[in-house]
Image 1 (cartoon, helix red, strand yellow):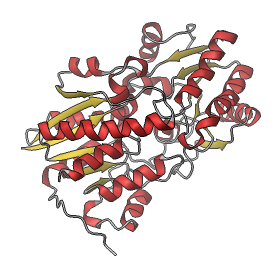
Image 2: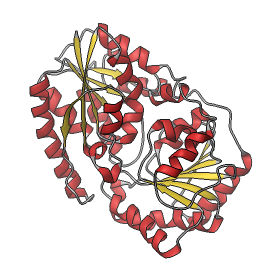
Image 3: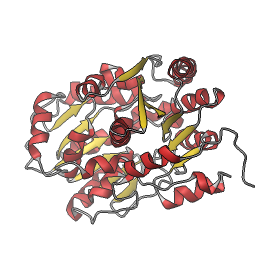
Length: 383
């Protein structure tokens, strides 16, 4: 039985890995080793450990590696702590393969720890182009990984051009779409219950037009994050369209974004915005699907929104270069651009679903490949 170690460090990464966790958990030929850490086990980012235990999934390790501060030096030090802590965890669990995902800063030290210990690494969502430090982290992981599960055809081609053997690259699509396929996205009662039980702010009439807003920090623009989010806040405040606003992630610069949101709440007391720390994809899916537009710089506006046909206003540089469908319009950190583009997108309405990132059948492909793939720990560039 092949032991597959999956690490969850954020709510967003759990959304992407949930279908794979479920598939491995239910497969007699694979043993799931689940590690939780980082923002996924902290209340301020929406602790999800209880949700997993309630679903009968055993958590093998809880790892604290985040150093508080959300500034570049604490992010670098947190990566160092993660390298040390995950090395210890891998020594205890002795997995046969470690799965890492995408481009978060802690995924690189997790990958380094596994590779230094001769543990094969399978990387999900490699080969994509985006802004911030994420771009460099993702390709670094691809060069360390032994098995690749990109989400698009062009991402797969890019991994091949990095010198990775073609036989290690499997284009499976975006794994979070598997979960969306299994949800009743028209069930607005899910949204009502979520709003009643979670978050702060007024109750929103979900039969009215509403926006979903998610703006994360951009680490390479660390000092400007407060200024940037204030442009979004001004646009939302002027429009007065009802909105659900999700808190930023734990990257350097998060304090700036959070400060802008807190100041807005305390000074303006907006009676048309409901704020959440974070949401599980089972609740986020219907919320996004029934919205008029998603605003900000989350990859959800690129991936999930295109699959659902939801208009997206992508702000700034965080998603620079990432493949996008027709539902996305890019704007600068500019109040007027943001406001005018939201109005335009809302007036256009729903788009045709895009399958640029797959059709929501990734987990089966990943699981079947993990069972039979012949890992070679020694890597060699192909050119």
